[in-house]
Structure formats: structure tokens, C-alpha cells
Amino acid sequence: MKGFILAAGLGTRLRPYTDTRPKALVPLCGRPLLDIVAERLVAAGCSELIVNVHHFAEQILEHLADRDYGVPVSVSDERDMLRDTGGAIRHAAPYLSGDEPVLVHNVDIISNLDLRRFCSMHRSGDIATLLVSDRETSRYLLFGADGVLKGWTNVKTGEVKPPYGVIDPAQCLRRAFSGIHIISPEAVRMMEAFPEKFSIIDFYLSAAATHTIRACEMPGVRIMDVGKADSLSAAERMFAGINRTMQD
Image (spheres, rainbow, N blue to C red):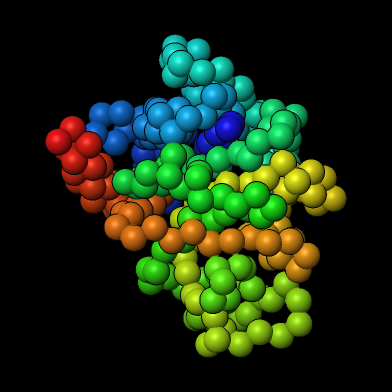
């Protein structure tokens, strides 16, 4: 399995930390987010890593040149334009080719997730498996009782986006997407029909009309988005706790 780290974002919510460096190199307990995620993907069994770059791309390139994660690392260059989460995968397609699924991980997501176990939950025939959680947010993915994606809703505005027909959000499981997911080779090929820039959620909502996209909810998993400056301290406490647990 290959691992794709989404690291190209501007990191505007992490200012002032990202005024002089990319979000991927913001330190957590003294270690860059990129290193933390890369090493976790390798430990989970990824035999190759792909990292996309845009904001302060040269710094990431220099950082990668000085690192050895034990597996080959390729760079998907987005310095010409940011392509959003879906467009990033489409743009990296030459590096994602093959017959195995790809583990996609946002660089600013920290968790105690057993990634190897998560990967084992992906079912043959499904085009994607999304790690989700039952946490409070304004935007939810909607799933049937079978865990299959049925739509999306914004609970603040009341907007609902079903991939087909009409759905009642009250009859669905509302779950928050974590930024960690597994995509099949078929999903990567399907993205060829999409524009250069698009959200992965928009792709999943479109694809759900004809293909199976399944939720994976793992009890006991703690997930934190380190995308905001005021969340760094809490993320450091959580990360330190995870490390202590792993050492014990």
C-alpha cells in the first residue's frame, strides 16, 4: 500500500506559525507534523510515500532531502496552483498507480488510530473507506445503517446534498470525517473526469450514486485537527499521551 500525505495547504488557521514555514513543518512536541505522519504511515505498512507541496514548497523539499523514512518518497508538485483535497489526489495519479489501495492522510491530523488495523477494514469492491467519528461539528457525512455513504449535511444552514434522489438526514447516521481515508485504484481513475481543483467530499458524494463508499468508526480512537493555532497546546498534550501509552 502507498501512503499519500496532503501537505500543500496554506495553513491560514495556523498563523502566525505558517507565516514563515509550511503547515507540514510546524513542530508538535519538537517534531514536524510531516515526520510524525510519515513515520506512522510507514509503521502501518506503506511501502512508498507521496507528499504534495505548495505553500513554502522549497522548505518541504529541503526537509525531505534530509530525511530517510525507510521507503521511497515522491513529491506531487502543486506550486502552480492549489487543487484542494480531491484535485490533489487527481494530480498525484501518476504516483498512485497500481493495483493496491492508497492510504490518504492529512498532515495536520493527529490520532492514536491503529492505521494498520484501519487499512484491514477496507473491503474489496468499495472505492473508499472513510475514518469517521461521532463528534460535534457543523458539517456531517450521512450514512445508512450499513455504513454506506448516503449524503452530506450542514446542520447550521440545513443544506443537504444527497448523491441521488432525496434523503432524510434524521434517518441517517451523522458522522464527522477525520481526514484519513483509503481510496481504491478505481477511485483514482474516476477522478480523471473531474476538474483540476475539487473537494474530495464532492467527489465522494458524486461517486456514491454508483459506487460504495463506507464509513469506518473505531471505538476509543482519539483524533485532533492541528489546523488551528489555539489547538497546538492541546494537540501536544494528546500526542505526548499517545507516545507514553505506546512506550508502556
